[in-house]
Amino acid sequence: MNKNSSRRASIILGVFMFVVLIAGTIIPLITRNQTTTTQTVDPTTVPTPTYPPVIADYSGISFDKVYLHPTGMYTIPEPTGWQVSAPTSNAGIAQVNMINQTQLSVIDAYVQDAEGPISPEDLDARFTAETILATWSNFRDPIETNRSFENDILTIDFRVGLANGQTYVARQNVWTDGEWIYVVRVVVPENATETLRFLLTNLTGKITPFKQFAAEPFNWNAYYDNVT
Image (cartoon, rainbow, N blue to C red):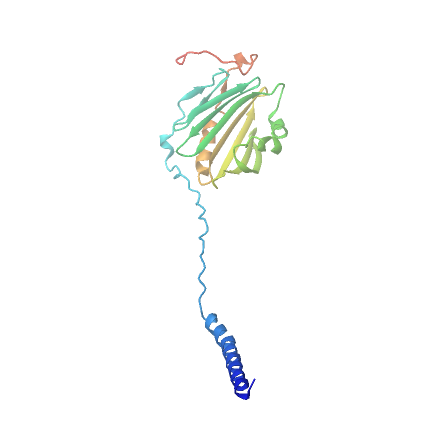
């Protein structure tokens, strides 16, 4: 290789090294100021639970209509706006549900044969927290929030939820005549506690038993005349 070729190779190599040096300095400066565009995914919006407006005027709710359980064992007032749904019974208990679809409210009531003498003071031991919580199979996270005993009535309060995020409150009143046990439980949305109190005030102690059938199984159906 002659001197001219060597000089030309040295120049080319020098220019190449200069370009590499400049590129290593300038390119990071350029890319540092560039905005990287990435696709963002909006989080799924969790719907806020909604409840029906609370009842402001209770004058339209009457308890004059009386419901006779198919077993013939008892009657209970049927409040205006709550419709009877799927009464059930077995050998020792007769139950009825009343539902108000508009208010998202349920009334559960039943009469149970105590199968021996029972006093009001015995009710607390009979209705243990474990026994009561087992009755909330259609709800989630049931919690007993309070329990009290006054005027021979056991009162148990609950807070329960549904899968849609709605929260409900409930109160169960229990009393006895020494032979049969009577239970009324009202479930309402958490914003309708006054409706709960109103219903229980008018239903507690208002179950009328027909003791002439006391010796018969509770799961027998009766045939009766609606007038008499």
